[in-house]
Amino acid sequence: MAELEIRHLRAICSIADEGSVSRAAIRLGVTQPALTAQLRSIERLIGGELFRRSPNGSVPTELGRSVIRSARVVLEDMTALLATARNHVRQPGEVPLVVAATPMLFIGAMIGELRAWFRAELRTEIDSSAPVLLDLVAAKQADLAVFERFEGMENRQLSEVEVRTIVDEPQFVALSENNPLAEQDEVDLADLADFDWVAPPPDQDPMRLRFRAICEAMGFTPRITHHVTEGRAAMALAAAGAVCLAQPASLGGPGFVIRPLRGSELSAPIVLVIRLDGMFAARRQELFACVAHAYRFIVDRNPTYAKWWEHHPEAHADLDAALALPRPSRPI
Image 1 (cartoon, rainbow, N blue to C red):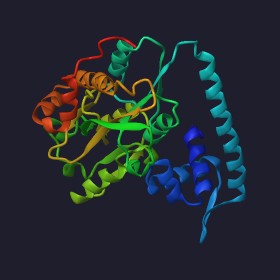
Image 2: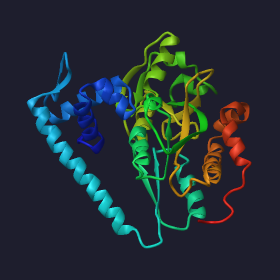
Image 3: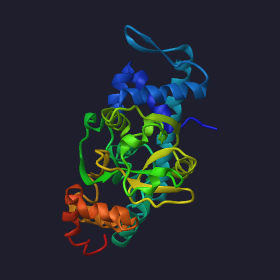
Image 4: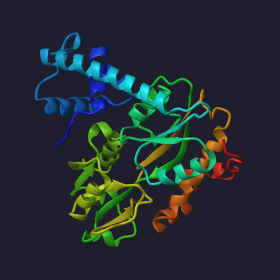
């Protein structure tokens, strides 16, 4: 059963603070349609309307005021809990490295690279919401973050962070091995117009609007039938006959295959966000080299992606430059 999450509470409080969904969306770094969809999901979970539209913006209902009060208490308690826990685990002279990331295939390799360089404690924060991860870095609760650049990110007011593009990652597609299109080396996006699509929920989908726009430019509106947050469930639905976008290093599995999209403009810029006031302020080049080596390690996992990589050097020029840099010469 779906449950309320901390990000839901942040969304509710942001709408209350800003007095409108559109302004709250800018504050959270998401699109207005995505935040509206998230609010509707929250209201379904709670069982009632939290805000009413008025000439003055979004006004909390009686239920909304009660929920907002409780949400603020929970968020304050969570902040205090995290601060207490982090102070407790820190030892004199030992500074933990906190790595935040969305679930991506190269994260394990990246952690391995960092562990070889970084002797002290290393912790990870994995979350499917890129805006939440960016908030962790901005709030100095994480030293670095890796995620897909999301729509609305340019509206965020960021200070003391550096954003670097690791790679402009192409989007492949997962489909049933029984689908006639599975016999092709590449699939035309337009040929998928009549299929059911699997996608993340709107508030967790960083390329939702771009995907829809590209599909509509090809003459169809994608029929998104399944909203899924877990990769294995998405692949199971693909095996059952639906289609979904997939990370290019993904491998096929029971009942489904992974294929490139022919001539598609669908790509996802993967970015590295680094705190400029942290321990890596003077060693950002070395950090970027670590991340670049980790990403390059997983390219050959899928021979189809390795072939695409060879034929599209423009998509990974910055990463190639980082690969030419030496790995960190000494642990810190």
